[in-house]
Length: 190
Picture 1 (cartoon, rainbow, N blue to C red):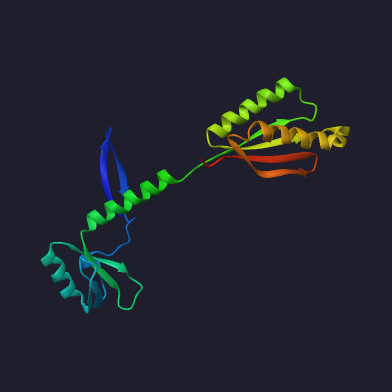
Picture 2 (tube, rainbow, N blue to C red):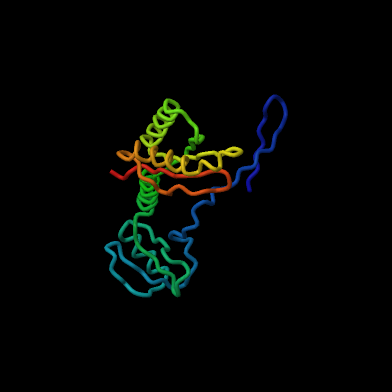
């Protein structure tokens, strides 16, 4: 760890700088094995040769000697442009991140005696959430003696599923959890 002094406002402050040790790949002179299994730039096997000869071959090609599999006996090294290799690896990670789908689970709560107008408003919210590729957890809450209206709650969830069937599919069919009935809707894969 290096330390340097910086003079700010008449006071000396010690600033510590840590070297960037993110990349653990051994390249060129950092390879410590006596012999390596060498792969040429075209992907062909050269064989097991001393490390100094492999470095000389890499220099002749104007490329780097990169340790691909350090745990093998002997380690496997490939002749390649290491800067380009790292660049392509970061590009692959970025592409994978872009293709990764993320969604949230939104929750809509209704009661068994929810009026038709309120239900239409809630269905509008469900359609908006499904349009944004989010999943929706529809919960019917039973309070007190409303628990005897469980069949009415099932009909309510069936009505919601029917109203949203053109854009959503039922991922989890209605089931009871305590005093609530839950159904999960997911966007259709079109």
